[in-house]
Image 1: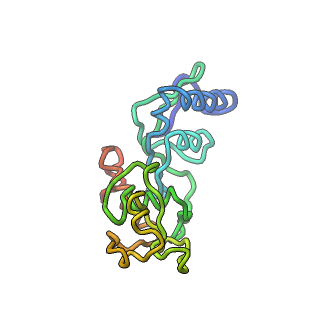
Image 2: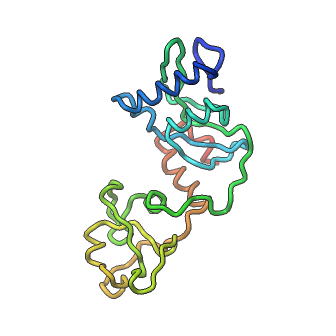
Image 3: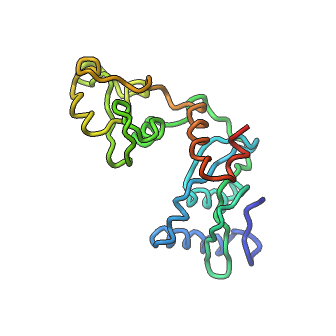
Length: 203
């Protein structure tokens, strides 16, 4: 179904500005949780390519870059209009996705490793994890997808500036670049909690 505005012709002019202001206000109050909900992003071809926050998804819809395919049941209210918060959006123009499309960052390393320490398999909130250089920087290791892993603080202290084998530690899996295949696998894991994602992910 398409993104739509209740009691209004479309998200343009002052209506759009009002919705942007409402999104900012909701982001500051207790109802802001709805704007942090994950939204599946589809290419124009209906191919799943990303996951973003509902607030970002609304911005893309309001700018005319994407349209809503599925809704999550929440509304964003502003003046005389109300916009349904999306669960799935689709880009209106096809975007070519490079083989490796994600930037190397702490957030993406933790996402790739599913917030799991790669040495002891403990799942933790992002704030309780750090990044570990498998080959320590002091011994020639670089900051790459293949040399960075999510790590809990106890394991990080235990390993120190040593190679894993030197302190009797072993990686759960070999770290690899975050490519489209990895992204889709994580999307499927996230999609298990939202039935509206299933028809786009499980095929």
